[in-house]
Amino acid sequence: MTDEHRTPVSLSGLAANDPRLQPAARNPELVERVIGVCFIVGTLCLAGFGACYWIDAQPWKLGATLGGGLLFLGIGIVAWGKYLMPRGPFVEERHTLANSEADRNALAAAIVERGGGVMQRRKLLGGLLGGGMGIFGIVALFPLLRSLGPLPKETLQHTDWRSGSYVVDQTGRRVQVGDLAVGSIETVFPEGTENSDRGQAVDQTVLIRVSNEAFTTKKGRETWAPHGYVAYSKVCTHLGCPVGLYEQELQLLVCPCHQSMFNVTNGAVPQFGPAPRPLPQLPLYVDSSGYLRSQSDYHEAVGPGFWERS
Image (tube, rainbow, N blue to C red; front, side):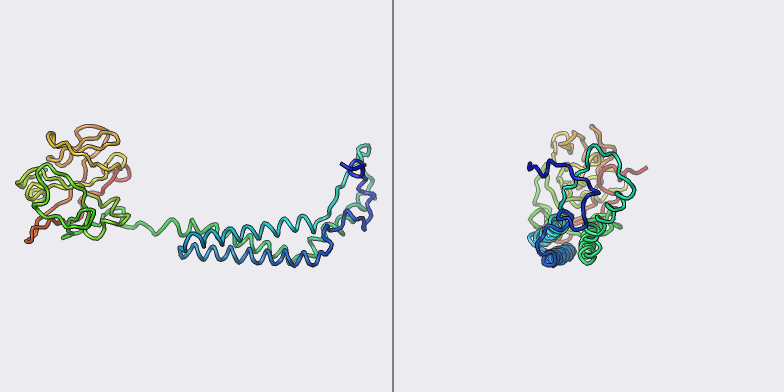
């Protein structure tokens, strides 16, 4: 630290033309223009980021526009503080606890003239900075406005299974009556959704061939299990885990997460574990070509918690 920095300086003793009250830049006008350009470029980059985000552009475009906007705004703010604001340092004498009214007035006048005047004379820069920060604030709302996606509407109550939907495996191949042996299990989907995100969620269904003959799981479902095939939602009614294990001898579907067990011959009523209600059953039929198809959508909503019914 130099002697100058160690020497206390009375604020009231600073003249209006004291070099410490002058901007650090040798050419303040040039610095102002450079900062203005930085603010403009940063604002345009942030606006570009908002546009790219809204149209779901490629990740590198999102990163480039957001990074460029924050970079140029940051450069402008740092340059403003470093080169256009009074340099100081300002040290109050320790033995002086209070200045006279005249000293305080003189100090205030000097700071306003050489310090606050920097802000007053550079309203354009302040406007540009405010515009850039305003654009950034608007863009920051985009995740809330767009990323939440469309309203769920009736999709929370129904799946993509429809009357006449073909039963297909994960490769999109239609399932025929002779494809599965007795005791076999397969994950199936309504045709057209097997490779979609939704198809991997609420549409997924376990298809089990319990026997070679049609049977009834419960009253009112006499036609739902043709040729010994029965289909249940794969989404556990406890916490939504995939129910994909089948114990053939006991004829139980087992959830691997919390060991809920469902009897496939009586409507998938829980036999053990925390599952609060049966797995919804999908009504099936066999068409004239021997393909398995759905009679309708599930008669109950699939999944846990939210779907609890009285």
